[in-house]
Length: 286
Image 1: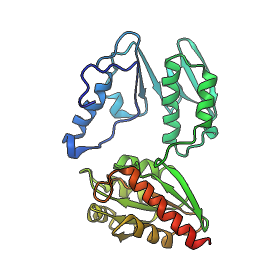
Image 2 (image 1 turned 30 degrees about the horizontal axis):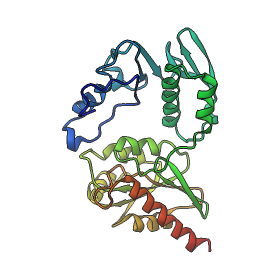
Image 3 (image 1 turned 180 degrees about the vertical axis):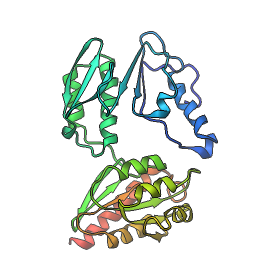
């Protein structure tokens, strides 16, 4: 959106607004302005899909699209997708009905339920049949590096969330599991404060293993709130996380930082994490 001038999406979806890329944009407000440009050229025949549960989104007002749809975990909007009891339901253009139950989704966490609602709203906005939308949501297995289940070793589940390159994403990942977590975090900071991550980890994370260029910053934030260890690389972090974990735990790579201190991109970091797990599995389960 930084370079878009005439771009006009038929449907624009804004999932949330949270500080990110502050090293580039200078402030959260400037970053939010850039995201809101998604809707700048919309008008007749277009639709905007907004998160009704996000205060920062609500503060922006209403885009100029002809139709504005909302998704929410707090009831059912007049136009859009929400929750009615234990059912995901929709209302649009005077029609409505059930799509599916939240437990039918394959992806964990309330944020993935919200993402599913946003996707449903976008699909319904272009008049796709509700039954086809429901089937797509029911069968979608997720993408690599986004809360991707990789392996279970000695009763410990290992999850690759390398795409979580900011604090908000890592906090969301932490909220996706009920089991105790051993968190692997680190990389190159985007200039964010790590205190909110440490607060979210308190009482939920058994141990954090911190690595990379942001290791010292992370350690200062976690000090006194969450037990932590240090590692130089992801490979070393995997070994320490495996040693610190107990049966029933989740070892979660959710770095809250970019990968650029040691990797070309988050995909390379996630692939290396998975390589380390293959080797760990071979040593543990010959």
